Image 1 (tube, rainbow over the protein chains, first blue to last red):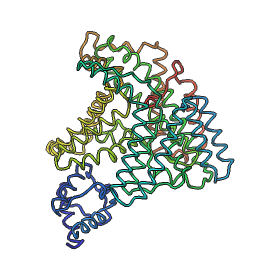
Image 2 (image 1 turned 90 degrees about the vertical axis):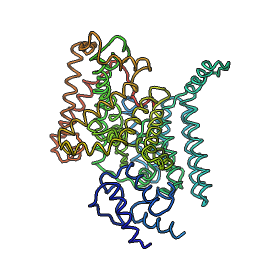
Image 3 (image 1 turned 180 degrees about the horizontal axis):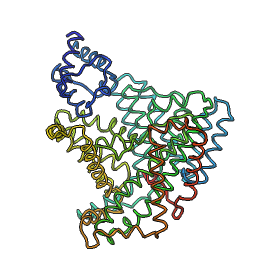
Image 4 (image 1 turned 135 degrees about the horizontal axis):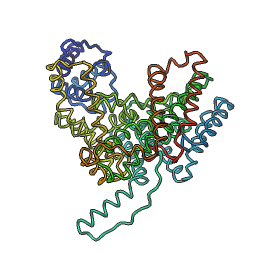
Length: 81
Length: 484
């Protein structure tokens, strides 16, 4: 999967969890930038990502992530393994 | 050394003068030694030993974690570091409570064993700096921070006296870099620091301590009251504890500001919160973000396959821990548990709540906001009953009698200190409210420096006069959060 495809899928997931079809997200977006992205939304997004991309995350991998771009890179790295 | 004591009024300027006098190379040392002197003033040498132990162990383990490449090795070192820190905290703060309850359990189970009750050791400050040490180790483990190579700066990071006794709990990434910046005399910071300190002092000795007199009358003798006094005393306590703790925090931030250090904000108009979740983003922010990052998030991650139930359980556990952090009593555990329950419930009804507001066309209206603030304040006050009550029996009595009783609407306890004292208290609160809204509100306080010097000096004089003449000197009251 290309990074762009991953980004599109991620946007779809986040829009679905936050119930906002108009959200625009880019590589620099972080949770703080988006209204209503609280800790409940956050874990729902993580679980949805795990299901969609068939990966399993560890808090150790997630904590240092700073924005969507780094999440995309992480997903890509996990899928190539 | 309490912030509202004459010793501190001499200590702080003295430290500042010495700090200015030495060359920049040794300023960290001045602050570190001062912090030890500050902590030593409590006259409990064992605390200085505990502080030193925490500093040395955490410093060492931080390096060990960072030096290991292997993740399971890093995790092992993290657990060792956390274990040592927690054991120290438990030993100083929770052991008598644990032993007492184990003994009670043995009695009720018919087991004929009774452990000797250990002495209750003072633990002032430990809860704060041990949590800070744990955050340091966790941040290194999670690769969010690098260990500090210089033991002196690290020791200062843990022991820095403005935040040593009651926080804020500072993250390494926020405080350590500031300690290393070359100090340049900043007249604005000095002025602002002194102003903030005085404002905090006012909150504490004029407002909090005065309100406390009335709260104590009721809470120290609940069975003599029913109805309105119980309600009023509880609401009053909500304000007392806010003035007390935010007053302390202002004094801490003001002290640090003299040295060009900006400690983290601990409060953000908590009683304007529109939900309990919002309240925790506004009250004791440094603790709740610590609980969120190091207890809640790992738990929530672990429980993530249980959907909303997983998050709900993580919240309840995290808040019970937060309650127990405050002290070794069932009252604190229940207080925490109640907040956990509030938050857990919101996990389930939040999606429906939004739909309901939309359907009733109340979304984003002023009326809804007022309602939400009112409800949240009452939920918080209800939980505070368990926080403040001297024991569980009192708390249960209070809740059961808050609406009933033959002297239901009698607020006679307000005259317990006499009419004059009541008038002075009311007057002080009104003056304070005026100053708070018009001059010291968070969006106005930065404009303070732009006021004309006449206005500024007028305000300084008002503050100083208020502090001297309106302070409650009748009882020597320590800060509420001192005991945590």
